[in-house]
Image (cartoon, rainbow, N blue to C red; front, side, top):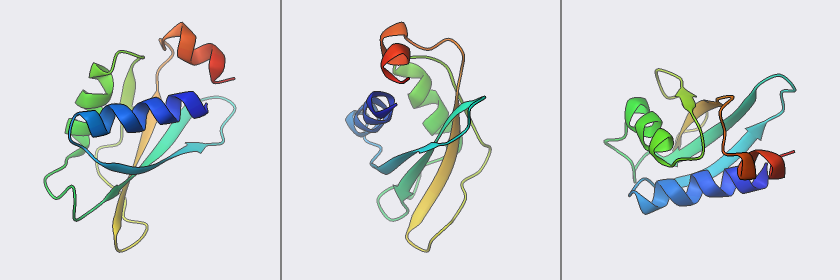
Length: 95
């Protein structure tokens, strides 16, 4: 899963969205990650924009929650569900 997390973080930063952390959510049924964004660096960021950027990466389909969660004062968090059609090279290394 580290490869998927790293790929997400680098792909977002290449597109001008600075993601501070990508955490895997331990769930045996669904592959999910939580993205943490610094609220000051990403003042105009929306969940829809994040979903669009993730789906443009080309490693699979992503579904994003409709709104950010604020778990701390400095960061916005967004839970992302990774779809069943993931890039096979990423998927095999994620196990």
